[in-house]
Image (spheres, rainbow, N blue to C red):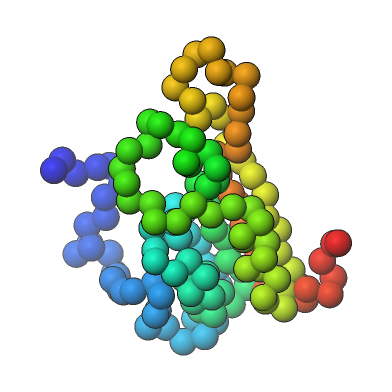
Amino acid sequence: MARSQYDIDVKKVENFVMCDIQNLPFRDDAFEIGYSYHVIEHGDEPLVMFKEMVRVSKEKVSIKCPNGIADRLNRLHKSGTHKQFLSKKWFSEACRRFPWSFTVGYSGYGNPFPLRGLRVFRFPSEINVIVNKTIPASTRAG
C-alpha cells in the first residue's frame, strides 16, 4: 500500500501514544483541547469514545464526523469502515449529558448523489460538535 501524504511516521513523533480511544491512558483534563476528525464513526461505542474525549480535555472538545444521512446516501463511499451513522440529534442528546455549553451544527454541504440530474439535492456532509468546558450549561442558549 502506498503511503499517503497524511501518514504519520510514529518513530518521528515525540511522545506518540497508540491506544484505545474508549479507554484513554491519560488523567482527567490532561489536554487543553481534544480534537477528533472523522474517527468517532469507526468505533463500536461512540458515546464511550465521546465521554473519554471530554474527560481528558480541560477546556474544549471539537469533533467532526460525517453526517449520517449524507453518509448513507453517498454511493461513492464504499470503504465499509463506518460502523456508526451519527446524526446532529445524536450529538445534541449526547452533549446534554455534560454540564457544559455545547454547539452542534452542519458544514460541508454537497450532493451525495453521483447522478447529475439529482444535483438539486444538497445535504450537509459533516457534523461539527464543540463542547466548551469553560462555560456552564446553564448559560447555553435554548
